[in-house]
Length: 223
Image (cartoon, rainbow, N blue to C red):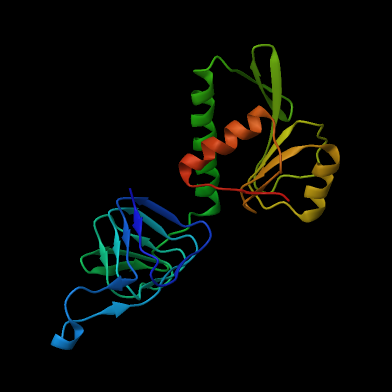
């Protein structure tokens, strides 16, 4: 269980994760201020895409910048800049840009996606899903039902024929014109580059989107 004390405002940005047994306090008081003891009432701000994985204690007045990660069992008593990895008690920055986060090369990024899809295929076959490749599509079959996946590699042409209920997995960001074409055809999509997805999906779309979440990939639904 995590405890958040909102005596003063607590601002939490988009795509921020707070794990178990974390403590976020906006005040600290018990002993008499007139006797010289400290009393603090200050807001706390967690930026967007911040991660507090486990047993992180955030003190009053702290701001943690966008994209920062705090190590488990850390006490955050001062501000943490954006894009930092901080650990310890008190937490200190041990890594920051460009070393953290270290973005993979385009080649390595493609390899990571291949590894994820290979693992997804192994995962669904445990549920008696049969997978076959045919032309541009990969077909997933189960209990008489079939769903098609069109996997667009980086740099591949996006103007390929799709049908209703097909799923497109795109490594590069899709343009609005391409997304509009998919909407008109009732084609579902998972856009890894643009971090978006179609508003609805087939069972294959939803299963793959859920599986990608294991790797921290969260895609905003199309409105």
